[in-house]
Length: 139
Image 1 (spheres, rainbow, N blue to C red):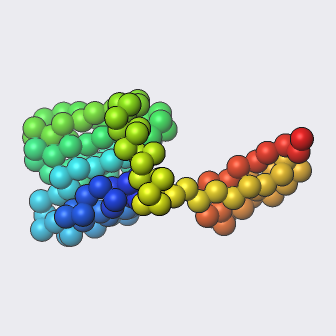
Image 2 (image 1 turned 180 degrees about the horizontal axis):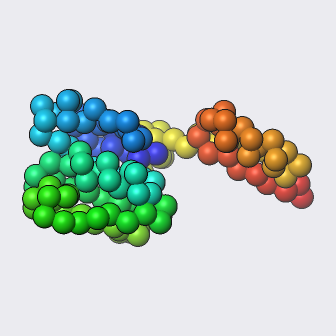
């Protein structure tokens, strides 16, 4: 969802999605990323966020993985801002709703009955779920 929102709102920006294996420095001429959004929030992704951010850049920690970002004189880069917002503003929420209504963004959801919960977790574990998996009991 984040990539869809960024692409819908930032036409002049290059959006790059990575996990922990990154080439950000190569893609930016060794400058680093202007904005880094950590959607996971575990120690390895937070370390990567600090490594790939540029001087005067921004790191936003969105993920609730329980990791900690070490801060010292060299990491994150000098004058890099770090934020960990929990929720956006009401105007931001309305903007996301408008993007969905205009079909600029969309959520991929696969529904499974409660009886297939074990199978669903296996599919998720093996990367076979496209988007989000929702398990619902039968009424």
